Length: 412
Ligand SMILES: Nc1nc2c(ncn2[C@@H]2O[C@H](COP(=O)(O)OP(=O)(O)OP(=O)(O)O)[C@@H](O)[C@H]2O)c(=O)[nH]1
Ligand SMILES: [Zn+2]
Image (cartoon, rainbow, N blue to C red; front, side, top):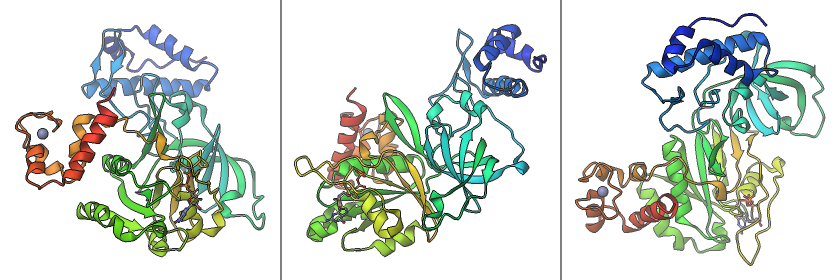
């Protein structure tokens, strides 16, 4: 094995309280057998220099010599990270690579659509995986990637199949572009990114079977606001009720500046509007199981033939038929994410003190409270509560706020 670089080692030793040899030994042990020596050398350099960069940006060094970071959303920015969660940049020569977007991930294989529309079955370069904290989240649906074409190519043209189902070659993902707009879910207290580069979020509820749960809508609005994703509230199955019954609810959200659309996958109501909205965007569809996400997509793009679940009459919860997150390119442009149901859609990375600031109607008042960390529940001199008392904030919205906090964030 060629000698490891010595650049920055002295500095590293000083900052981390570890000897150069120990750092190298640790690094070699972590990566041995998993990366080529040349990769190892380069990654070592980047690992060390990125640790030092972080240190230079005011990160604290704990007693054990490990860097501690401010709370970050694990994997949110998809940058490869060392086991300590620090970002590591992996440089590649893009001239030899092909650009595309990840449509879905199944185990080790990602389905990537190149910009020319061709599909490739890609693996992820090992070094990207070994540097990631969440191996499952190295690439996710929606990611923009650079990949190297390898192996077979050119067996496209299988008639009668959608373009996004015919794989024409194999590839190796070498680089993942920084993400914007992410959607995460939480399982076993760990957060996983399930969709990246989300431009808009369709928050789908149904007028009946199952009935609307405003708390779920509010939660998803918070998530959209937190990640700068444009939300649109869609209330489906409007054919099942008298639309007048929804007027008050729709009015509250519309008056806050949110787009609200009532639809029916059965009668086609407002589907043309929805279809037009979906063009030129990567849109995520989120909503409880059984609200009609698959039915809406099928009505908009009949070729999709997504599995439609049958809603159980007893519990009206619907069955989970949609499991893995995938990005579906639409014939008229744009693409939609088909994401798993709402049960996994929890507020994991939102602090209780942040919530009011993410709600447009509460936001103007939060800075007027006596305490900077006011939760606007039981505190004195709370501007938010004053605004509720004299009607400047809708009491239903304040109730929703209290529920969100008490049920989701303060219950543990
Ligand atoms: N009456 C009525 N029924 C609908 C409408 N849209 C969907 N359904 C029915 O609602 C049930 C659930 O629809 P799906 O499209 O599978 O719901 P989903 O949100 O994709 O469910 P998951 O895949 O479990 O997340 C099916 O029986 C559909 O036929 C609608 O607009 N009106
Ligand atoms: Zn307050």
